[in-house]
Image 1 (cartoon, rainbow, N blue to C red):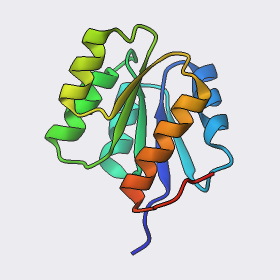
Image 2: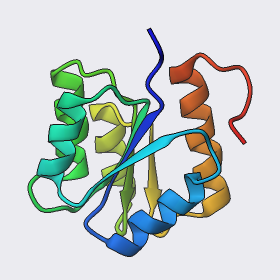
Image 3: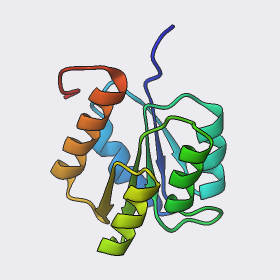
Amino acid sequence: MAISRRVLVADDDRDLRACVCDLLGDWPLEIIQAETGSAALEILRGEPLLLALLDMHMPGYTGLELVSLVRRETLGVPCIVLSGDATEALRSMAMHEGALAVFRKPPEPALLRAEISRVLRLSDGLDRPLH
């Protein structure tokens, strides 16, 4: 069976979604976008994904709620949370719920790319960077 090459980018900010998609544009991935937490949850439940990048504050479900649902429903999707108010308390809660990382928006492109590459190598079984 072929390994899914899908990555979910969920954020109600169209510009931020576009920036993250551009950041991943040269990698061999299929990028799926969601504008709401509800749409993101449908995708998380319905499609095999390598990774989900989740905005903290979206209509429907927050990124933190989605991370918790992914863990409780054993969907097995690694999650990174993005937030304009990435406090230490939020970071701690997100990591406790199962997020692999939390980035303040807008994220530093090189740092986000490095973390995404690390997570994708782990979830895809790769031993080399994707770029």
